[in-house]
Structures are given as structure tokens and as C-alpha cells.
Amino acid sequence: MIKAGIIGSTGYAGAELVRLLLQHPEAEIVWYGSRSYTGQKYADIYRNMFQIVDADCLGDDLDELAKQADVIFTATPQGFCASVIGDGILENTKVIDLSADFRLKRVDVYEQWYHLTHKAPSYIKEAVYGLCEINRDKIAGARLIANPGCYTTTSILTLYPLVREGLIDLKSIIVDAKSGTSGAGRGAKVPNLFCEVNESIKPYGVTTHRHTPEIEEQLSYAAGLDYMGGESILINFTPHLVPMNRGILATCYASLKEGVSEERIGEAYQKYYGNETFIRLLGAGQFPETRWVEGSNFVDIGYKVDPRTGRVIAVGALDNLVKGAAGQAVQNMNILFGLPEDTGLKLVPVFP
Ligand SMILES: NC(=O)C1=CN([C@@H]2O[C@H](COP(=O)(O)OP(=O)(O)OC[C@H]3O[C@@H](n4cnc5c(N)ncnc54)[C@H](OP(=O)(O)O)[C@@H]3O)[C@@H](O)[C@H]2O)C=CC1
Ligand SMILES: CC(=O)N[C@@H](CCC(=O)OP(=O)(O)O)C(=O)O
Image (cartoon, rainbow, N blue to C red; front, side, top):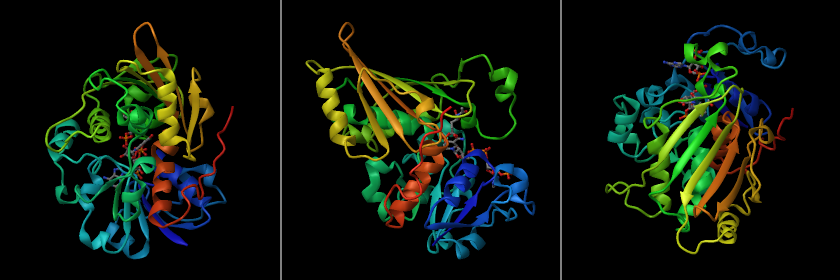
């Protein structure tokens, strides 16, 4: 059995990790980490775990945890993992970080968009960006995985085949994305109160959202650009908060290169995702909805060409807490430990 420890197990992403790992046939949770609830029963915080989890919450001592666990998940705020990571931990265990600390390869870009000083820049190079469908070969031998974000997983996977195959004008990409409020985490914040969110939809982080450079970097690699040398795709990324618990939907627009047909687009999606367990290709003119992926590790993708404007509109949807966070983290764990990628992740979407 893989011994797993979760730092931040009381947050939304951490709680989803608990739910998934409890159902994983090859893993057991040895550490329910928390800062505020140390010493309290985990099931007293999350009552869905009543008579399922008997453990108390422990603290965030990663050095001690690294001696007990084969893998540590850090489902903690930006900056935490970078502030504690070190060889002492990585020599004993694997780390899958759900925050953005090791997702961006350029420390100056991280510091500019996150307004934080990076505490462990020397580990950025070795960290592997854990977008499983694209990077599984590199993930397999890694010690430190940077688990991608929810908006970014949706946006990158939706656009990747179009960029990789050179079908779109790289200067024309717009991502218009929506998220359920669990994406903002469990911490109390006025903009996320019921009355502020319910019966409304609002854009936020317009032109400044921290996921913009993550999408740009990964798409730049897909396009074969020398990102570290200063070449980069630039996009417009606009997230919106919508009154639902879970779900991300990203509507991506791009101008097609001369002569690219809808059929060619379909071929590109088939080429990269035709055999992927967790990517469901809906085909031309069929569009995903968050409700059809909720509770599962699926990403649903559909597209259509607008012949009037010469643009393709490609839409992706996933559950932000599953494929956008905990599900992808478990998928990464499966790859790290040589298990079939769908072990513990054969989750049927919930509806209604
Ligand atoms: N929510 C989502 O949809 C997604 C989240 N993520 C990422 O996952 C991470 C967690 O997000 P989310 O679950 O939403 O956040 P929450 O605010 O819901 O949870 C944060 C967790 O981190 C713990 N924590 C907070 N500060 C510290 C600290 N200084 N030291 C140790 N533990 C700390 C909290 O512990 P306690 O409450 O016990 O004090 C809590 O368990 C973030 O990096 C986020 O970007 C990634 C993809 C999607
Ligand atoms: C609705 C909401 O607030 N969403 C969060 C993104 C989700 C998240 O936690 O970020 P990562 O995916 O990078 O880890 C935000 O906009 O910052």
C-alpha cells in the first residue's frame, strides 16, 4: 500500500483528496494535516467522514511526515510548499504540490504574478509539471510534481492539439472561463459569501489573473517556442465566478490558419486524445457542461468553426476539485508508483 500524507487536508482540495484516497485500492492515508484543527477529529470537520475516518488532524511537520509517507500531497496556499521543501524531504518521499509554487519555470514570472518571493527557486528546474496527458513520461521519474491548476488544466488541454498542430494563429487566443466557488477555497472571504455570489456572475482578475502565465508557458512549449529564452505566446484569460459549487468551463477562441477545416480540427483532437481515458471528445458542434463531469476525473471537450469569422470556438469542462486538483494529483501518484492511471479514479459523474 502507498502511504499518503495530506498537508492541507481540511481545505476543499485536501478534502477531495481524502475522499479519493479513501476509495483508492492501493493507498492509505497516514496523515491528515491541518494548521487550525490540529488534535481535532477529521470527521468532526467534515461530517461526511463520520464513521469512515477515525483519525485526528496532525500538524504540518513535513520532515516527520516524510519519514512515514511514500507520498506527500501539499494542498496548501501559494508559498507554503516552497517554504518547506528540501532534500531531507525529497530523499525520503515524493511530493505532489497542488499549489502553483513549482508550476512556472521562470522565477521572475512567478514573483511578478503571485506577488511573493519564491523561497525555493533551486527546486523549480527539477519539478515536473504534472499535466498527465501531456507529461506522463517525465512524471514517472520525478520527485516533485507541480500539479496544474483548475483553470489551466481546462484551458491547456482544450487548446493543446490546436497549438501543437499549428492550426491557429498564436496571437489570437482568448480564454473566457467560469468557475464554481469551491475554486476559491474554504477560507472566509467577503466576495465569496452567498449573497455576493448567488444569482450573479462576475469577471475577476481581468488581465491580471495568475493563471495567465501558466497557460501561456505550457502552450508556448506546445508551439515549440523557446520560452526560457524569452519567446512566449500571449493570451487574454478572463475568469468568472458563478454560483455553483464545482465546475470549470473554458470557452477558447482562436483564429484559424488559412485552409484549416473543422474536419482537420477533429483529427487533431483524435490524434492527441483519442486514446485518453479521462478526455472525452464530444466532436464538432457538441459542447460540454459542468454538470456532466461533476464528481469525475473527466475533461469533456467540444468545438465548432465559425466560417463567418474564421475562428474556432473550443470548449472544455471539468470538475475543479477532481481533474482540476485532487483527481489529477491522484493520477500523478498512480504514474509515480507505476499503477494504471485510472486506479481509484473510475468515478462516474454525479447528476443531478
Ligand atoms: N479549490 C480548488 O478548486 C483548487 C485548489 N487548488 C490549489 O490547492 C491549494 C489548496 O486550495 P483549497 O483547498 O482551495 O484552499 P483552502 O483554503 O480550502 O484550504 C487550504 C488548506 O491549507 C491549510 N493551510 C493554510 N495555511 C497554511 C499554512 N500556512 N501552513 C499549513 N497549512 C496551511 C489549511 O489548513 P487549516 O484550514 O486546517 O488551517 C487548509 O487545509 C491551493 O494552492 C490552491 O491554489 C488547485 C486547483 C483547484
Ligand atoms: C474561483 C476561484 O477563486 N478560483 C481560483 C483558482 C483556483 C485555484 O485554487 O487555483 P489553482 O488552480 O492555481 O491552484 C482563483 O481564481 O484564484
